[in-house]
Length: 144
Image (cartoon, rainbow, N blue to C red; front, side, top):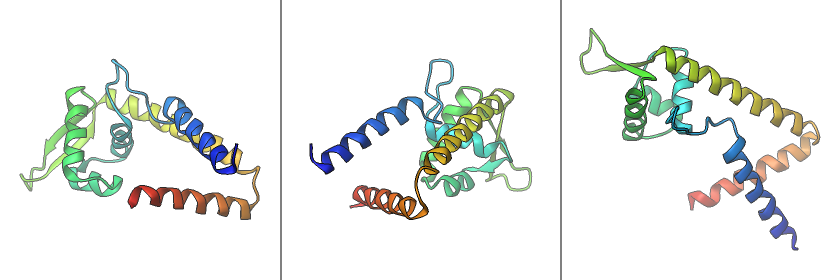
């Protein structure tokens, strides 16, 4: 097997494993959320935010945030509150159920970071820079 094919096989395996065991809270009948929604819950743990603030924080469009938030509201993870001083602004905050799910997401996220840090100690700083450069170039493939 060529070097490129070995890398592709390893990347494919990583993507499959990450998708099934990652810090992302897997969507279940009970939770009904996706990775984006889990990240929104984590952001809302610290403060109430508007649609625009959430969009800026996660780098998504406002319509994408609206869709994600609607699902979180439907499943009683988030509530919407219209600003008393500016009726055009709506702030989103967590319900107790949303807070519990956000805590679980944060714990899973931290666990993934701990695993990554452990793995990275096996590589020299120079090798880590090479890995980062490789991944950045891979990400550019999707931008073309």
